[in-house]
Length: 202
Ligand SMILES: [Ca+2]
Image 1 (tube, protein in one colour):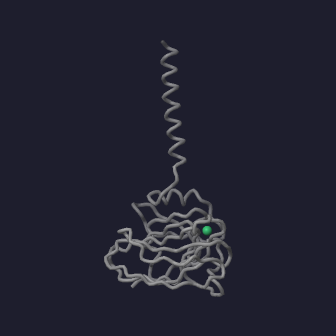
Image 2: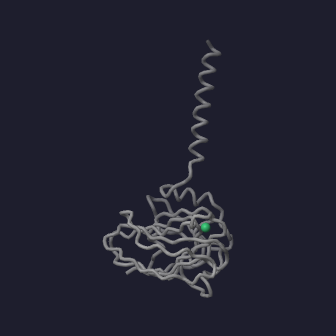
Image 3: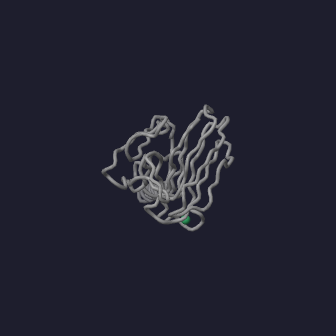
């Protein structure tokens, strides 16, 4: 009888442990982006830690230097990316932002695949800027912008190192948020350093 009870307790413990392992291995999504970010070490420790917008009381942290113009950093409420962490005014590796032959002083340095959410609250008319693969790495990527209704507002061509920066301007009328998305172009994410630069909300 006592052994039976022990066996039952052991089985229960095993089941809970199995569930714990299964849950721990579920890929993080946007809803627990903060936890995912906390688990990732900075790519370059010398970069400053930067606090972005707060989401349900959780502060999101990126790395880099300075601030984005127009308080745009405070609108970032969530982000995910499969390598490294988001950098402000730097590439994902902590270098100056560079697309093709051009260098940029402000923007977001990320990596495919990624999604950066800007909470807009329906207050803006348009978002413009430039996108491109950072010249510090290779890889081929596609940039997209989608709104809260799932409408895709912008899709870039397939971009790679030495592709010149591509300009975009999208209408935001009524959008509660937009997601800045980088996809891998269908051939994996290796060395896919992606920059969103000169972002401007109107
Ligand atoms: Ca790719």
